[in-house]
Amino acid sequence: MSLPPIAFPEPTVLWSAPEGDWEGRPLLVLLHGYGANEADLFGLADQLPEDFVVASLRAPIPMGPGYTWFPLTGSLDYSFDAVRDASEYAFDWLDSVKEQFSSVSLLGFSMGMAMATSMWRRRPADFAAVVGLSGFAVEGGGDYFQDAGLDGETPFFWGRDPQDPVIARDKVDFTAAWLLGKARATKVQYSGVWHGISPQEVGHVAEFLTFEVLSAR
Image 1 (cartoon, rainbow, N blue to C red):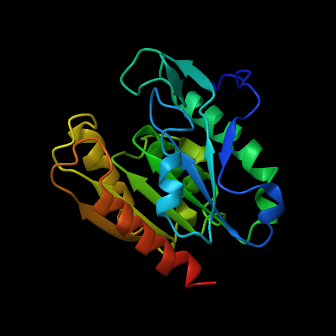
Image 2 (cartoon, rainbow, N blue to C red):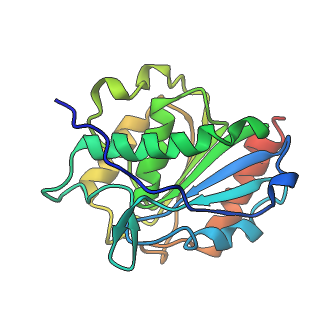
Image 3 (spheres, rainbow, N blue to C red):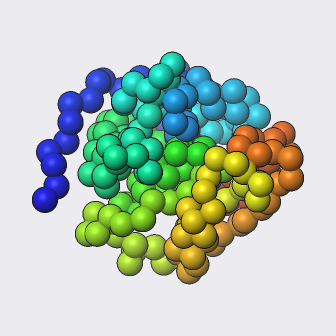
């Protein structure tokens, strides 16, 4: 039986543009990793296409010096309910702003990739593109995920280092198998990045977003 959602704080968001400059522009939502915060990925905003309004959302659960979306998947505290609750928290915020934008895309790093894929799986038609960096997709989900609606047309960028010491091999293998047929996937592997993001990778993400989102308008 699912547990009721826990009480989360009001969203904390860093924006690359003031609200008066949002109307009609594409939105890119940044979802940070475990133990980080909304500032962790925000430096990417200046390296991505300036047409986008970039919003970096803070995860709702305090964790060490930063925050997390849900407990680590291997911990005793983890359950899929926590993924569901985090996704609904992000949707509550997103639904309050998205009508001002021409489209919404997601970019998640590490656990943030689990969030990005979970949100996309919940609402397959809502997102113009999804970027996952050094992360994974979660297993399970039951009726919460609408994977049948993933028709293979959403552009998906997956960047990672095969020697990433943080993301376990079984999570990578599951994600690779799950992704088959779900999206128009661009998969790029990087050497020497480990569990991080390289300048080359950011350049590839910028090209991907330009081609798949901006050129499609």
